[in-house]
Length: 398
Image (cartoon, rainbow, N blue to C red; front, top):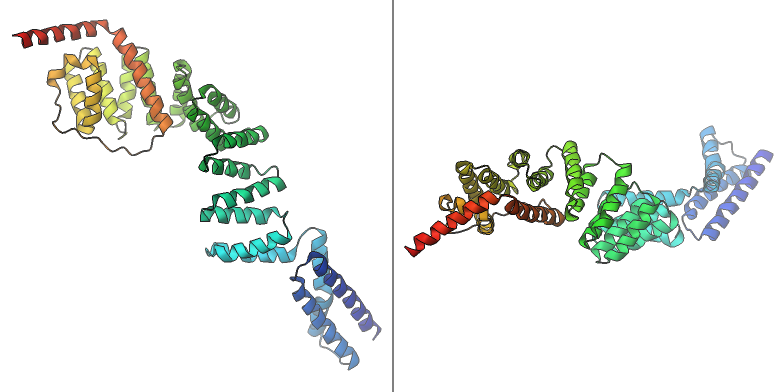
């Protein structure tokens, strides 16, 4: 009898504690626990009044309902574990897994209203909005994540990319600089920041970003390759060459880097090395026509006109419109012009689009620079071109 009275008193105290928690937190999730507790207390009270002898499993069930369950909840909350929040969040996760974002959002928003400082809820909402294409809402949630957790570097990165999408690139640069100040080894942030600086033609600043990133990731292909592009645009071909060589060591299939190395070899009048690199790039569909064009030029310089004719005609077969346009601008081809098969209808080959704007720009810059130095450096060919032109003029007069 006394034990049952003590049990009922303790149960009522625990019931009161849970009740006040519900009032304090303004969370109706406690109602279910209170109902379970009340049922346990009621069963025990009836058994006490009617002097009933309960089976052992019923006794254990009453103890769990009235004593253990509220104690577990109280202890978990002391450790900052909100069981109700976890259960709601789990329900949202299930909805997300099945693609029911609307129901998941409703649950998460209701939690967010009561627990505005909950990092996990903001992160889940941010991801849902991102999947739905709600950039601004997603960005707001990621900003909340950063406010709560200053070391959430991924959210910094997400916000920076959203700012780019919203054409707020200067703000993105500022955000990325903040991120890299906190975490300088964040490669993706370095890559995006450098790209933004390259867009503004701020190549020296971009080079500094890449060099800082390479301190933490010296064997990263992308960093070495892109630093080579920046050096190319700065006309620092020696350092560009070193970067491209490192890139090709890290990735043997880096055809664009090999193409750049070939052009730099031409720049330094190393025809054999340039020829070797161009031959290695022939299997790249986007670059093959240019490679055959350059190989033809090399063979003209070497005096191998038959091979030069063969290569230039292959280049025309691959991309007639582009190559014919390049031939018309290149004096070297005047010596073999009569042997070049130029079709009546010129066609432009559709490229795959795998190369970015900065890569194409660097390629064109290298080609233009190489053309200038090549034509200046091979006077005997220019002289031959002059003689050929004189003969053509004489024939026309006749």
